[in-house]
Length: 526
Image 1 (cartoon, rainbow, N blue to C red):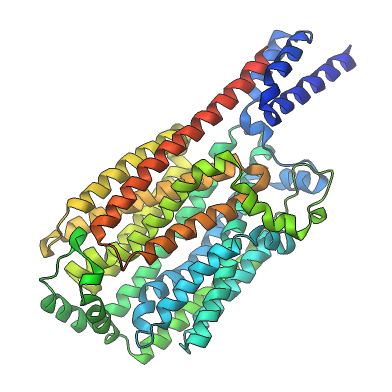
Image 2: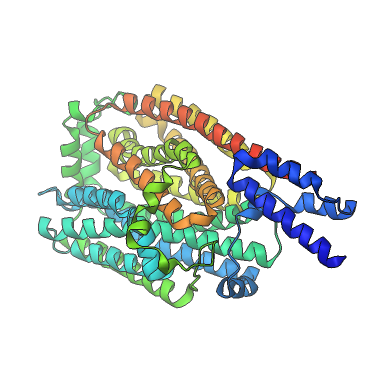
């Protein structure tokens, strides 16, 4: 009798899995389920509560993965997430500071800006290779190798020539896509292993929590990087003071048009006078030190977590290089990924607007370059704290859909403020308020979009997060690309339009997921 009951359970589960893989046959599977003998009511109730959509997107059950699950206690999981966040904090503290000063450190030949462009172009290309690189080197060593190239790029700035920085930037970009794919895959794998170890059915919350902790630590790089920038600029504020005096009549805010103003060259020239050669050497030495600390932290403290495919009757190594290479492109055939394209591109567009247009058209144009660092530190602090609060506290009580809809509504209101606002020298507190609001929006997008990809594409994480990074880098590249040609007012309208359309498409995917999950519960309840 027990054997017969076990066989019926197996049959029921197989039919349920088939309903997920072949939606067109769901009504047939439901009829077959009805024909099976009824279970005990208490058994049925427990089954109804246990079968959710996330249960069918779990880790494989090969011996290596099972051992990882057994060992993944809460302390070990939290330790790995914190270590990864600190390692990224070290690397991007240096990169954020260098990125903000790149056009000023090497203004004579423009090599700094060209090298940054080569990084973004390389990032888009690298996303095609990310799954292959991660499977060959594992997530941990993919991140370590990329950190080494970051440090090499920092060192290359000691000799700022085109033949030095542009190839280094391109090589760094070719590993930037795999870096963030490996990071997101690691966080998701740790979260899933801990959820299975602790028998937590709400995997969404666990992923959200760990992603929030990581993003909170990682986003503090905006604080420390801009702190370095502030200390450097404030070493000699004469240039910034002259800038405010000589250019106080320029139209700032949404009225600012870079192509119609010659102030950009004047601003950069004023800033470069405050950075002498000895200060450059000190800055670059700090950046290299941060890079080395990131590498050491990752190698010595972060545990390796290998993943195998869900269909574990074959090994990852059996996939050909062409199949792995095309896995990212195949993601775009997935309807869920297609619906998420615009929301990820918007995150990149807003990041580009924040670090390019807001700093220049609003802060530097009105208050002078010496105030960029403090205001951007406010942005970084709010973003970091919000990431942690959203991941640990708020996500337990507020659903992802409510978060994203509320964040989008708040973001649209903020864009309206930026479109109408005419900043003046008396608006100093308002700059910090707006920067803090942008930091809150950034935290919502960073935590929720990463979690969304982690939940929807658990069985193909490397390709999914490579696709995410490609779309994000595309948004950044577009934002920096049209920065010179469009006025700020037009850019704000573009951001608002893309966000509204992205929100509509996101609502569609949430409805599809909820309907599929409800259908699973209905089948099990039969």
